[in-house]
Length: 381
Image 1 (cartoon, one colour):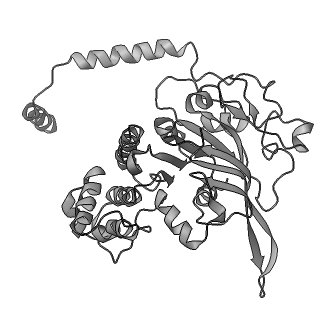
Image 2 (spheres, helix red, strand yellow; image 1 turned 120 degrees about the vertical axis):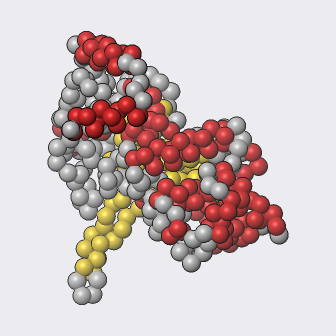
Image 3 (cartoon, helix red, strand yellow; image 1 turned 180 degrees about the vertical axis):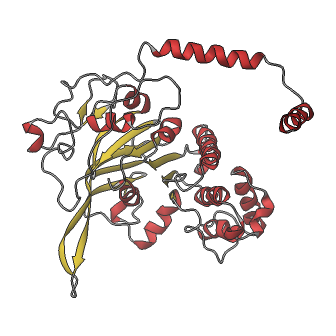
């Protein structure tokens, strides 16, 4: 089956200039030889620390910035060979949801005008059908149809992000890239937007919001692994411009094969009382992308690194988990110790005591609000 989007050997460098005459001092190696394929209806998450090249890769996939090397095919076409007019037509099928919902919306346009623009531009509706489609999009993302009259500053952050999602859906795309779509929102609002995305993607798998019933593919760029596990079918872990591990979500979370992936999972906060602490996460900072280390780029922070890691670049090969499509770029993939368990055996007793305590309070009859108020007044007297 032909992938919806396929990237081979994508590279991107940014020149660093300084001085009065802006002389070039070097290059930031943002993306280095990325191979990636996304199927229709699939949700792929790209994760990693800040500065690893996730957002740059997302923009390369949409040609918002041009790669320095590599090949990119979208819907069977050579995406990099399209001229400006053909690219404008192709972008109807590939959209993006930006991290900052306020900065990504035109403050001079009402929400209705913002959503109507791509519909008219691509000739998807005519006349009064445009307003009907705008109302449909707003209701699809959980907003009232009369919100079309309002301007971006009149909405909350979560509502603005819903508008950003509606705008991405307006052109009936086959692919949406979400660049940290919930990281700028409060935790409670994050949950609402994530539930919205999960609902939309669930409908898309059945031939919903995508164009002409085609399942909608989604690329989620995030550093929040809790979000990723909630929404993604497949995960690609990036470190310093390269993918170090990729595979089905449950395989990557259940049997992480790369030391960097294990460190990321160890850094996830644990909210259940009584669980044993995980091993300490990584120490030190990501090396400068101006001068990335030779060989495996992670060897300067890896506790298992050997001499071969300092000289040879590892290839993405089958991971020890044995699951299809689970690959890891590590010279020591077959010799690493198993990942540490998430809980120790002794934690079961702690959880049992907590469950018994919760059950005790659940048996207590609820007290009327008026009685609680009287008790508080009596105590204060």
